[in-house]
Image: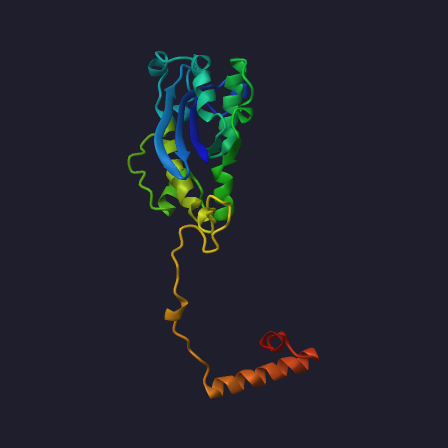
Length: 235
């Protein structure tokens, strides 16, 4: 399965107010492994960033003026996310901006370019209800170092989110079942070794424990008005 972990940085909070994407970072994950294949682009927004946004990403108008416009690199993004599940933290924010940028380039909405969009923030809120679920908080919770994160760069945040996502979803493939070439399921599960049950130690109930258990079953019989399920199973 191919996934792309994506993050953007913008000039402000709402594309409806004319704000633009200034940085795009994408990290490829295939079969739960970070491949090293990345897409990282700085973009010229043809406008200044709001002061609050500038404090977050630190990308000045002067620096960005020497980089391409979104329309110039749009096809690179389209090709990178094609047929992938795209994972974004607070996906509604990023997809709204990306769809606005794509519309300027006469391209379809972002959600139509990939297989699906998954919001890692919503997933984290379900996994950790009532807790802080910012990227920094999730890094701390899962022991992922973000000490080098002084400013919020799109590629750095995408790399951190990829590690966080793999940590949050680590148990999803624990019960996977392998199939051999003939399509038959391996009843032992994925990668399980043959197990010798004869090595198990059997601890039998003492006479006193057996007598106490029988008395308990008698009480259940009386309460149910018929033999309890344990006697049926035993029979």
